[in-house]
Image (cartoon, rainbow, N blue to C red; front, side, top):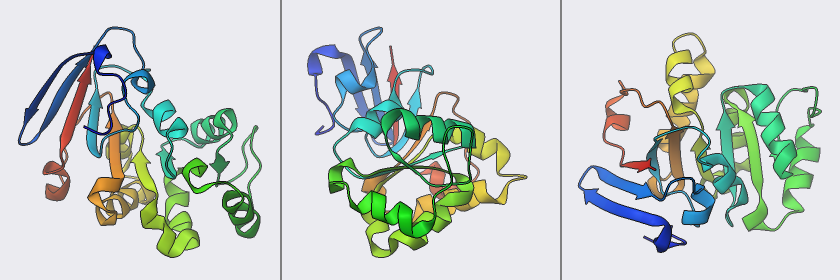
Length: 194
């Protein structure tokens, strides 16, 4: 797996047709084990393993979609990523032209965008053909599943996710729920445990 950075931190890898189970040595963050997140559904055994941190520090352009505005703006601020959305206590809302100017001033592999569900369709329009070149990560996919019944923007994110190239997308969760969408039920699953 090209994603693996340090095999010595892996206790075992078990591959089957539908997915892979990886057991890493206790207490190590994903950024110590992997260069990149693998595509597909990633089920972590617990929160705080560092999946979002890994994507925000990996050497590829990424779009990270968070369920909450305050989480999105805080992660963007902490990692000096580009936040696109409405104003929060720690981030001001950017105009599209200024946002694109800031994003395009960065080397491609350092382009990190953090948004909430409502802003993902706007980012897709702003980036146009470049959108598919970004790794699309939906964080806390379980929250998106639960909230999609009353927040249309959450279900739209899943639609955008499914349109995105398979090799360039991941759904992250520490609380896996069964997907009702048949296309998501066939997604490759990577389970990561301590």
